Image (cartoon, rainbow, N blue to C red; front, side, top):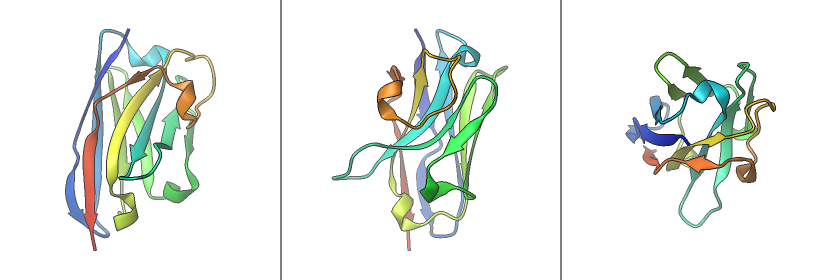
Length: 125
């Protein structure tokens, strides 16, 4: 079983950048599908980006071209580089792991088995 811990959130002005990290322990993320989700107040949790254990990625339309998901298997850490941030990106961001590592990446929430506690991102205009 994998444990996940996010960091890197904070406050930034519109147009700025942040890099989120998700450190994993208990198991190697190279055997999982990994993803980032976010949840704004009053809204459902939505998938942002996902990466399969062969490196394939997928993104929500709202972040394509601005966000980049990556993972460092040696560091057992997942990353989300977020550029050109807008106030609409403000949310709690969560990393997640799916046992079905052999499958392709997905941003479907129900596909994920393990979740971190989240890190907050606030973008001001």
